[in-house]
Every structure is written in structure tokens, then in C-alpha cells.
Length: 389
Image 1 (cartoon, rainbow, N blue to C red):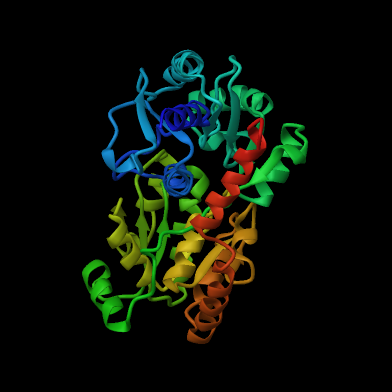
Image 2: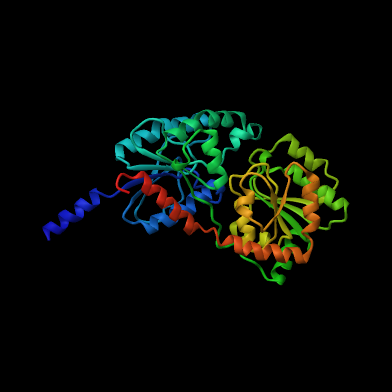
């Protein structure tokens, strides 16, 4: 009996300690990186009870994010609401905690890591938009990222990103060996699914006075090309298009240019901003749309493309960055810098025959992605970081 207790104690002391930056797990406010963090680590902590997981928050957390008994939630000061506070949290509070608790590996889904200390780091950099399109970001935040992210990338034991496009971009932009970079793609929520015709009719009655509509999903900021989308929508309506335009998401960086594009649009009354929707409402509104329009100037992945495939909603997306990789041949690809190109796709996608073809291809493309596949990719990357695999 006593020997068994000694063995169990020894096994406990040998447990791997993995800390995760979970500061973007915010109840009812999950954006892309937050969803990535929640879905992947919800799977991993349940799949790997032998690991002692530390979830590191920067403010009071919601208990729903403590996914298992082998998760220890930790709150470190200060709340990271400004780049100066990012620096204090990551370069002062966090490394001291990692050293004190003798953490074996620190994983940062938003790419930021301590630049000192002996703890191994796995940094996830989702895209390099801040390098290629600096005008699309807040100047202070963008400047911080352009200065520190190359340092984070080189300090990390391994890097991960969400697409082959981003892997190639990281390797080229930061002169990093591709062998150091793993691809951990996004997945999609199981609540995204098709609706019956009568359900779609009910949704359209409630949100668009019964009319068909195009939908945009995501944060509202310059790189999402909302100006180009609204300009294309005006051209589309001028050529006899009947759909409305639904823009779903919160204002992340609302500029004068976006406001002007909306105020000067001849069909302003046909453009409806919903703000953030609940997961249930979002899934129903997407499934009832004529098509998703994701015509961004830059995407490291493009999760709404997968969500639309799952909801059996046709997709129009840009032909740049990672979007062609994610969409495959299951979407109409457009030039994000050409309102005419976007308008032509809007007119084309009204064809029921074309919609049926795209929906069928979307189902095939969707088989390449799931959150389970994603967390398995993350686990493979973690194993490469640990001394004994």
C-alpha cells in the first residue's frame, strides 16, 4: 500500500505542466483567436488528463472556460487593455509566474510570449496583416506588433499558424526555417447547419422583412473591406439585384471611410447592421442567407467560409491571402479591390443551379476541417516542444 502511494506521488510530481494564455476567453465576446483557444483547449484538456493545465487570464474569468478538473485557472495583473499593459503582463507578471510554478511549456494562441526566462514557448501567430497592411490597425497596437512579433517568433521554440499561406508568409517575412512552423487550421462550430425552407422563411421575415439577403460575418474594421462590399452592393442593386445586405459583427475599428461609404450609399436603407448575435441566432441567420460575402483584403484563414459551408450557404470570397486555400473550388472568388468583380459575383450567385453546385462542393471541402483535427495538430506541435516528446 505504502509503495503504491509513493508511486502515485512520483507520477504526480512528474506530470507535465502546460500553461496557456487564455486572456481572450471572454464570455459572449469570443472573436477568432478566442474561438481558436476555446475549441482547441477544450478538446485537449479532456483528451489529456495526464497533463496539468494552467489557464492564465488577465481578469475575472467565466467558470465555463474551466473545461476540466485538470485545469487550474490563474489571474495575473494587469488587465491587458492597452499595448503598455500587454508589455507589463507578458514581460513582467507572466514570466515570474512561469518560473515560480516550474511550467514546462507556455502556449500563446495570440502570439505574444515572454522574452526572458527558461520556459519553452509555443507561439501561434494567426497572420501578418499588421506587417503588410499597417494602415488597417490602430497605430499604437500596430507599432507594438511590428516591433515585438519578430522577437516573439524567433524566441519561440516552435511556431504555429492556421494556414499554409501564413506558414509561407511567416517563413519569408521573418526569415524562419519552415521546419519550425506547424499548421494548425481552424474548425467550425457544430451549431452551424442547414435549415428547412420554412425555417429560412421565418428567419428572413424576422430580420429582412421576408427578402433574401447577402451576409457579412466578422469584426468591422478596415481590412474586411466593408467600403468595397457596400460599393459593390450599390452597383448590384442598380443592375436589378433584389437582395438586402446584412452586416453582422461588432465595430472593432470603425473609420471615417467606412462611415462615409455607408452614409453615401444610394441603398443605405437596404443595408442592415445587426451588431453581435448569439451563436444560435448567428447560425440561423447565416443558414438563411442567399450567400456569404467575405471580400476582405487580408485573411489568415477565414472561419466564416467554413461556417457557411456547414450551413449550406453559398460563398463569395476574395482571391487573396488564405481564402482560396480554405475555400478550394467551392466559392466564387473575387478581386477585393474591384467593386465590379464583387458585384458580378453577387449577380451570378442568384442562380439556383450555381448555388446547388457550390453547396455540394462546400460539403466536400468541409471534410478537410474540424476542431478535433485542429486539437490533434496542436498536440503534435506540443510534443515537439517537450523534452521527452
